[in-house]
Image (cartoon, rainbow, N blue to C red):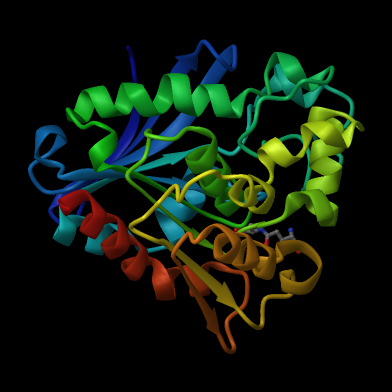
Length: 286
Ligand SMILES: N[C@@H](CCC(=O)N[C@@H](CS)C(=O)NCC(=O)O)C(=O)O
C-alpha cells in the first residue's frame, strides 16, 4: 500500500498527517487525514475512524473538532476519510456539483447501485475493504481496538457501517446523526439517487431500521449519541427518537444526550468530542 504524504504537523506530542492514495474501490485518488499519538504508528492503543458530514472534506473534523489533544492523552490514532470521490472525472457527472447535499461531499458512506454513481460512489467498500484495513495494518491494530464515530451524514455512516459489518468495530458513537435517512429529505434524496426509487433497498442503509432488525444486541458496551437541541436540522432531518426507540425495542444500551442551546456545527462537536474519544478508549481497554 502506498500512502503519499501531503503534509505533516506536530500536534500534542504526536503528528497530524494528510495523505493521498490511489483507491482501487473508488477508482480515483482519495485523500484522508491520520493523527498518530505520541510514539507514532506502533504506539497507538486504538484507532477511531471519524466520518464527517455533508460539505466536509478530510480536513474539516481534523481542523475544527480539536480532537488531537484528547487522542494524544488516550493514545488513540484518528482516521478522517474524505466524504466522497472528487476530481474532474466525477465533477462532470450531471448533478455531482449542483447541490451541497448530493454528489461531491455527500457520499453517504454506501456503495451506489444506480448510474452514473455506481462506478465511483463506493464509499462503503472503500472504507471497509480498503482504507480501514490498510490503516489498521500500518498501526498493527485489529477490530478489538478499532471504533467508528461520525457527525450528521457521518453519524449515519458510523451507525450503518457498524451495524452492517458486525465484528469489524469494537465501539460506535455519533454526534447529531441522520438516524432515519429513509424518512428525511437528505436521506430520501441520497437514497433515491444512489440506491434507486425502489424503497426495498433502503432499510439496509438506515440506522434505525437496521437496529430494529437486529436479532441480538449488536453493541453490548453501549452506544453514545449526542444531539444539540438548537440544531436547525433536528426536526426535519435527524430523527434521534427513531434510533432511540429501535435501540429500546431490541435492548441495545444507548446513551442519548440532548444538549440545550447547541446547534449542528463544530462548536458543538468540539464540546462533546472528548467524551466520544473516552467512550471508545474505554471499550478498547475492556
Ligand atoms: N451548507 C449547509 C450546512 C451544511 C452543514 O451544516 N454541514 C455540516 C455537516 S451536515 C458540517 O459539518 N459542515 C461543515 C462545517 O461546519 O465546517 C447550509 O447551508 O445549511
